[in-house]
Image 1 (spheres, rainbow, N blue to C red):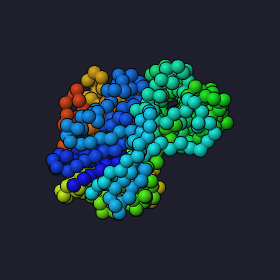
Image 2 (image 1 turned 90 degrees about the horizontal axis):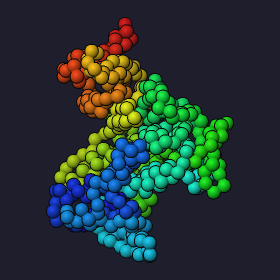
Image 3 (image 1 turned 30 degrees about the vertical axis):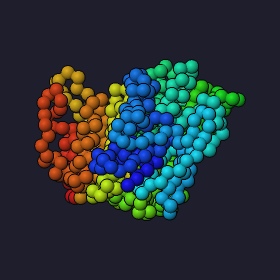
Length: 450
């Protein structure tokens, strides 16, 4: 049996590795447009900040490493045609000297084409000094340009935008972040929690402009100024962290059904074409809170989907579950994370909810080094927890994971306050901040009931 995988990112490589794990005989070929595979794009901002020494450090494996597993990886190759009724595809192998067209047959095809950076249609985006941030090549270009720059504008205040802004600030640049919406990290945090992150970032010396889109980038050949609302800002470079769009062209060519944003798949990661699977940023997923399709452009999602697709291809039954989109990030000393729905998102989806909050410490109050921690829990009027947001300078990720499990299991605020948590003065308060937020939610639910 032959399996061809289009895409060498987390989803594609996870699929290939797990197929090999379950079957030693399947012929596996991975085709990718990049010259690098198996690297962590999430780490690019941390190379800019110097917290990770070099881009080489975020590459986990080279193509030749997979030959030892009998997985063939073809780099610098673009698939341009899928002919599924003949179970073959055509690709163009590119190098500095020539371009060669080839074809390859398959029994199963896995589309792991990921997504491309979305660049809004505004004047000046083709000037030198305007960058997207998606791949190692993007990171290398940004770092090289930044080393000879004094000012930068980052467009988009999602996780990657803010992480990149901090990285550039650490490189010594004067940085402005602009976001067309009225808050930072609008997909994950409510405005009250977002304000805590904003205050920290501004104290670090990064300027934040909210509620104003980038109107224009000005320059003759290279970037000179950015127009944001009514303001014209001098800048040497502009980073477009303005979101992504799934790459679905090949899936459409193969006859796969497309949803609102991306490729539609079932719980097996199988498309509407039985011998074609799809994984990663190019597919739609099912939201566990809203019961609607959504997107989940996360490395953790991609790796899990790769495992599920691989199992089903080799005949092992497995299902990909609905997502909660658990995310965490760290900017400077500040960690923040979210899982499930925000209060604003829940209300937009017609849900009646309340929020319980706590502001506490990460350790016993008398223990040296205790840090402030803010927790917000979202629950339905019946007490079912549907979301959580946490901000602190330590131990955010494990608490987000705890709440991810709680939400997935349908735990209520009433059940959470009765649960047992560990305690030691150097590690926690005797009553965990999560419990305090759940108790606040219970009190609000009690008042509503009365």
